[in-house]
Length: 305
Length: 330
Image (cartoon, rainbow over all chains, first blue to last red; front, side, top):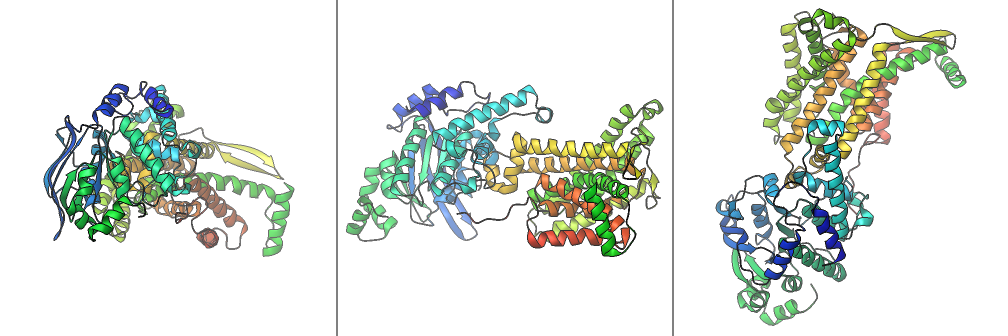
């Protein structure tokens, strides 16, 4: 564990009274870190036969998968394959036309706010921070669901209010340190460099204390160095006991990051397996890249994107 | 004083009228600040609602008017006589009554008039706001059939005024005016602190900036919107009672007039900005009272000067004093 993580975990002991807070629980983190390679145990998030139809367009057809605790799953597929639609179904933004999504065996509530409360957080393909709030305020908004403040206490700044604000501020500071944005904490989100905006989105998502984190193209537009930093960040998040689903076009990134990879093509789950299995699968090669195998091989193993 | 004197001499030269003495100026500045603080208080309701649901709630002025009538009704029908005599008992109760009525009206209007139209084209809620405005005026008329005429409003606060002589004359400020000024500013500052540094305050700002993402952060936008109407309603209701006490009479048109000024103040200060609403309100109050005193045409041209200021400011700063420009990300 890095010093940053330890800082994060120790801060958690004085934490909120809300349950479902695996971020930073030392034992859970260690257990999950040891367990993640096996991919066994109870699935924390499970989609069964999820279909999503918009008018005449079938965006998702009978998609099923399971995410286990401490696992990092990659979701790849060509543009328009339904990856983001699947994320929207997993966060309660869309109600699937058919099929079910369950978090720890409980059906997902049909309200994004309550999904967040239940422990799923996400980032967005096109960054959606609160542009006119500072970096730390963005993270504080993420704490919303884990904070309790009475109306009277908020007005009069009673002891309970001050305690809750102090705790949230402390947690925010640690999360910003965790993603390496301490120096930007008082900067407006819209003024942050692009790559840092993506990291801030991750910090904001982590502030909700998720057990599942959904990352929608976390390295889009990043250079090799930033991409590597993001990979390390995702590993660190996994080691905190958070299960992660990553959408990414950068196959090299996905294959070196994930325990399992799901390939979505035209709304259907084409292949699911370890990076090695997926990489070697001729169907993936053809469907995802739509090019002769030799070129594809070169593309997958090569570095350019 | 010298500055003011030379200013007044200049004005005399410009317009050729007889120069108002300095104390008249000071008197008008004080009157302007009192009126301006009220306008600012009402402007807060416009600016917050616009910030969150992009609706110009034209009925907000009527919420202020209803608050004044609510306060009057509380005073006349609910207060026992012994309580009505002592301002420190009467004032909080009348304020509470007025604020409560205003909050109820504001929340009901959101729930039944605006919420069903949340996803409708913007014109629909705007027209609805005008309709709500008329409906509220008529509703008050049910209880006060002669409401078009000015109705006497009790002076609940300490009667009389603070006066001192300056620049060759006496200027006076009513105690109820001081109360209005102080309460308005204190409430505005409290609101700013609340919005800046509390869970629900941040939720309000987040909802204003991106409602869908706010929802994904676990924020319930409905609750935030209702809270916005509650705060706006409470401020307007308090403003209604204090203004009634200051002028000692109320009428059914007060909401429309003050509403126009307050809306202008919100635009001037930069819609969505709390500081902006207050400063815009004070500026409009000053323009109205000084313009009525010192500029040709007198009070008949109130609206002209106010909108001239609005236009001039918007030409140079379309987002208002503290408004945010829509900036493209770097």
